[in-house]
Length: 341
Image (tube, rainbow, N blue to C red):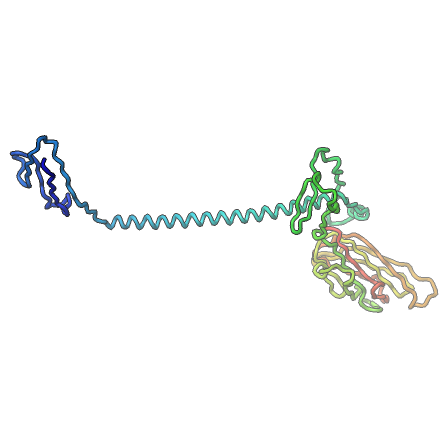
């Protein structure tokens, strides 16, 4: 061909109803009825190049818009759910870590406490062992057997640890790596040791003639001897006492009389709906000397171990009538020492 000829039909979509039909070298083909027929004279039929520029138009649909919005909302919901699940498991891991730290501290404290208790073995009181089989209404508890020595249980190759104080933390370290200059004193566990409950009451009157009254009183709490917070453990009601905690108690008492005649008193414990239980009794003989009455002081003291229950009412009752008592500090008193729960 001498040159290229271009036929531009821009702006007409291929699917348009009014698009033009172009036929090349159709000859006298009877099937071609409508359209433009172009006859090209070329040396070879293959030397024809056709370039068609078309514009494709794509119409946006409402369905496509709705589908896009739905996918966008679904993505946001998935992101929110994923973040919520991650936050929940993060909180669970933090809580689990705190619980593990608490268990670790308790484990370390218990190991140190057991080591100190094994070094300082407690000795069972013979008084408690002898009195337990005679307690009424309660099951007698046998004393624990002495723990075997750690030297017999541990293997010679067993690894030993010691506790190092690092301020607020305690760390178990291998004893073989301990510095010889390190303080060898055991770790102070005094804050974990519970104070023994001691409560004492003194007479709260110079001289009292009971007359026909049997209950000895009034009493006053000895704040110098009683444990801190003892008011919540044993309550004072003028001439009797109310036990707030059940347990095994050492009960001791002393009463001083101004008389030449014999005397006796009893310590009673009673539940509100039960009959009184006798805790202990004390009796004296008469004074046959010629001393004056104001110098004839007869004292009677007693000590015993008893199981007291929560709600028990404890008092001291005088057997004889018309007895004069010295209800003063150092003369007449009663006390409670809690031995165990």
